Amino acid sequence: MPKYRDELDAVLRALADPTRRAVVERLAKSPAVVSELAAPFSMALPSLMQHLRVLENARLVTSQKHGRVRTMSLRPGALDVLHLWLGEQRTPAAHQADRLGIHMTCTTPKET
Amino acid sequence: MPKYRDELDAVLRALADPTRRAVVERLAKSPAVVSELAAPFSMALPSLMQHLRVLENARLVTSQKHGRVRTMSLRPGALDVLHLWLGEQRTPAAHQADRLGIHMTCTTPKET
DNA sequence: GCGATACTTAGGCACATACCTAATTATTCT
DNA sequence: AGAATAATTAGGTATGTGCCTAAGTATCGC
Image (tube, chains in turn green, cyan, red, orange):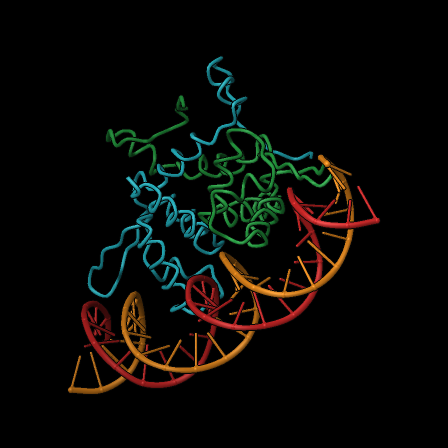
């Protein structure tokens, strides 16, 4: 039961950094190897690696190494825990907001 | 345009802390005054105030002072930006599911 | 085998964050 | 007015985070 909280905490902490969020955004499109992920950033490789480790510890991404190349992927359902929490927060206030016609961008998916 | 990113960044950073998240959870139920919010925590008041300031800067909450009492409320739609981002990160599989009208809401992600 | 490639490990520095106590301000109560 | 209450400001510490360089390990291609 407190597992959910820990999971959520790790996920939010991981996503609180712009670099890591950018990595997640990139991986949402498709898996990529470490050097691919590193390319867009003007950051030393070990620094990026550290971010990748954080993402992996938060179980947002997984990786597997083939030869000397490590491929990272976004874990399917990795963000579910966040969705769940968000859902819980839209209790009375959200309902009120809905009533008042204040926009609540619910689970309306976007096309890319 | 980069406003969205900044906003998202502030929100995620604010939510990355368990104390602040607990405050948000509390405020999702109803507005509350500072001392009410502080009560559940074994934390000095100024420490909690700092968290409240972070939440306010992230525009997750608003406050107004009447006399010597400050009442904090969750800003309606405060979490929309997160919802929006989350929607964008849905994996290709999720996009497909959306198209098909399958709702992939998580309940309890347990097993690995 | 040998150099190039793709990470990985180790160690270190600077600044941010989360907490504290003590003192202050501004209201409200008696 | 004077004491109690609610919040705020000021200032300090300890740990965490994000970044770096330098050096190491393990493959791959010739």
